[in-house]
Amino acid sequence: MDVMSANKRSSTLTVMMSRSLRIAMIFAPALFLLILTAGGQPITQANGTIPQELLFPGAPLNMADENLPGALNVYSPLVVECWERGCRPCELMGPKIYQMASDFKGKIVFAKVCIDDNPLTMIKYGIERTPTLLIFNNSTLVYKHVGNYPIDDLKHIILIVLHMR
Image (tube, rainbow, N blue to C red):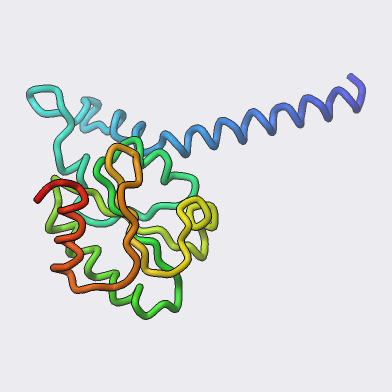
């Protein structure tokens, strides 16, 4: 085998591996839910469905550019807080996101994305100021809210936008 064909094979293998890794990262949340097991048996209810506490966690998920698209396919509705380091309003918003994730467990999934580390999300959704809440329903952005507000106001906005109130 000559050096040229060895380099070509190596390059092709690298492309295939990176493509596989990207696909795996996009679908990881869905695959995770499908392969959860306890003692080798899938964790399902008597009717064959996955329990609500697995589909709707009681704490915010940490998202990144790589796994947000997959999460949008798995979780609906999904509220994503976009924050940045050193942002005082973001620091004040953090506990509210945790509280709302707990309060809406079983109904709404919450997630957090640090835009310092995830520029693709920032660009894709036009995040110019933080904190910004992105509210998704059925994988579609339905509302973008900028700023830190009292928790009751945030809950009201989320419920109204998602037609849950």
